[in-house]
Length: 116
Length: 118
Image: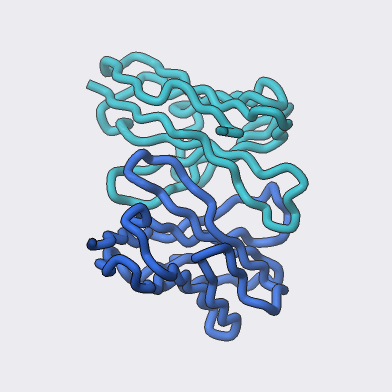
């Protein structure tokens, strides 16, 4: 069964507008971490934002915010004021347990294309 | 600058040959490293967890004799694709946990290695 689901394979967004990327997850652990990574065409993986399962506040990092709805098991990424450089693949990922050495499981990704 | 360095970034080889990919942590020690494989336009699939001083832990369906992993030191893990075939062509990415990162458990990723087997 899929542990991380990203239902949007691709999205267009107008420059300067906000975009929400969906992510739902499945775990029976009480302790887990949720991540978003950006992968431009160069292939590198760029860490964007992290949300721990016990964090009560939604995580924010600059133009990125994570809409964490624990009961619904969703962790949507919101990118505000989109820029042309935001065009990339975006992956949601989950780490079960809190140990930093635990592996990440990735969703299928969402390709975002920002239009000028 | 990069905190995890991967080499080579691109490699083209003939079918039947073996290819070694190196993953180094820079300025920090990594007792654990992860190797992922990514097919075009697809997600990252974990292949194995590399453990310094012990055998790697392979994910289900990954051939351990095909993909040899050696965690030779606290800063180096290598992935060797043995007797490569065209279906092994892919993008291979290594990663290491951020030191002291129980707060985030963030992974540092290497730049990736694109393998093409002719």
